[in-house]
Image (cartoon, rainbow, N blue to C red; front, side, top):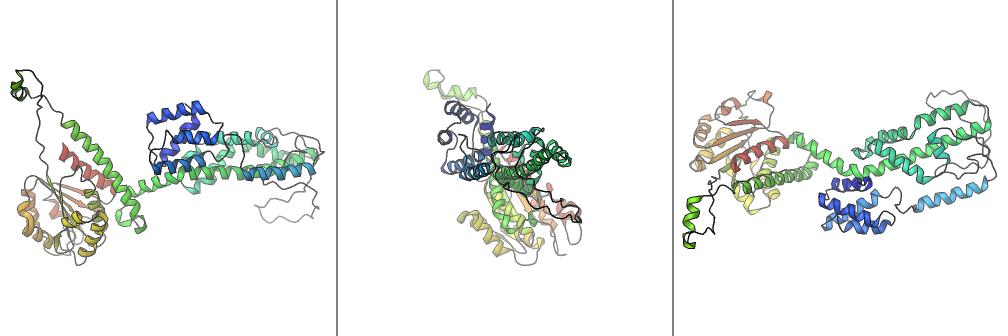
Length: 500
């Protein structure tokens, strides 16, 4: 398989462009037909088989331009490179006439001109251990030939060969795995090492110690070209970072935000957290919708089939299947929205209401002291707006779980039956008030399942004013839940019970 094409498709997938296996095969056939010679023709051809939506086409254009920006696939060079070569051509004319492998060679971009000698300065004591001793500029003239592979490549003045070697070294060190900007120096050093930096450094050091002027002149020239190459490698790594790690960094942040405590999430990350919640909810929706479709197939019900086909003289035209009635439970979500617990309530409610395709109807309640039903808010408003209003209107006051349980009993305990799942989110810290655990016991006896999600770590349960020990006795399931990863697991288990 064409490695260049597969790496490009990998970059597109990293940028959230959906590409199937069939579309990959279409792209391979396209490249086989059009080749890499004409860059614009290749871009137009691949744009017909890979991106599908307007957003994906825009992303495709950006990725293509970045992916093939290092060296034009047609062999043409950018204007900046052309200008640099024109400058080097002028320098070549000035220094023409010398002998040896690099005497009249073109100057590499970023390399100082060699038009004349500097006056040798008086030797000064070197007090800085990290500062190299200033060398005499030997100027243009005869040079010996480089012996190291990288040295020969640098002195050959072939930008295409250097580009190829740099790209091969990048593949060897997996530069596309770069994730954060601070890794740029690390990968640049790895690429230089893979290209033969150690051997080149030894050659430069040996040439510096020689008395033969052409050898010392070669050492100085190799040193200048090595420094130029280092800049080129850093630019190459930076372009790979922009191409791959910009999205990789986002994925890394998403992975971290899945695991971090929601109370520690800064407000500026809320938008990204919401995107993660929607992605997780979509994943669960897809998974459990598929299970329900498979579940509907069932077994053939022979008696019903025969009865329904009696009008066709016994010929079986209309099949009847055995089915099991799925008893969809009711879900009650009771959320403590006081203090830091509000962050957890925000994303649990967002999660539950993002699963409207597979999740049974959810009735939501919020409290800090007095409890109120907020289901209507979610029916009339967007999820984000409804959550903001809940947190604004019900987060004040001193936390009182006992009062909240009494309010729940007075308003809707009669609606709880053996089909009801109750999810309670809170830290059970009751400010030393009456916990009214007997009401939770009554809910426990009536309901199918009570799930208590506590955002505090287990070591903090039952300390201070926590009533977790009493409430835990009347809960079917008690979980530590303070991250999106915990929340996804709990909701996933709930959906398995609903659709199974």
